[in-house]
Length: 296
Image (cartoon, rainbow, N blue to C red):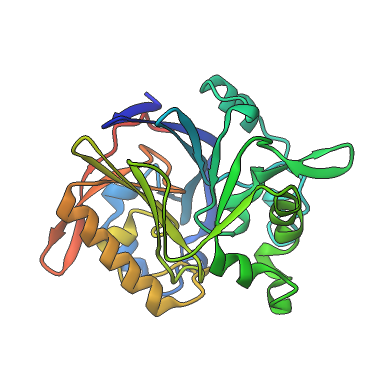
């Protein structure tokens, strides 16, 4: 099952790819080996194996109030990614997977980029006759203003290298030039069921999308967590968090929000069942149950 209904909103999971991505110590430098062993039963095989963290690149498709909304757009094809060899000039059938979920590029009304890291904006654009053009020609791209400012090399030349090298130029600037970008800050109401709110720390403009419909609640959590280990060990960040203290504070706040409201948490990168419910355990959190999607 790749579709679920939450109130009046249908949620579909569309995969780009999944598998091992980085060694545990490189991805999460502050997490001791003992913590991975302690939680191994909940992590292996979907989220951990052979000392490697396993993740998925995927898009959440929401159908709400007659509109089609995409949450994050993966890594993308044909893009020059010198910092991550495995993502360099990909040729994946993501658009075919999207079509099999009943979505053509021209059907998309809104694209939500929870933040502007390389693996969240890749399918914003595609290469046509040597030019980067918006993949979704009829969509408005909702981008958090703080990330737009931070990742623009014109404002911050220091971000031009590293994992996000070329990303602004090939995956953000073309949709801006096409007049399809809407910047927002702090919060933004999408419709009666969906709203965006800032969740800074991982990046300055990191955000989450909250669903509240018919008594059901969900948190499309972006990179609030990359692995279920960060539910039980919420004080640990990935190596890609720009403001570690803010990332921890935001994670604890939003996991508490989800636990108190029985909300389904749908991060950008969870493999396996792709989503989970959390509960409080004293001052910490635990996995209450996995989401209802089939395992990748």
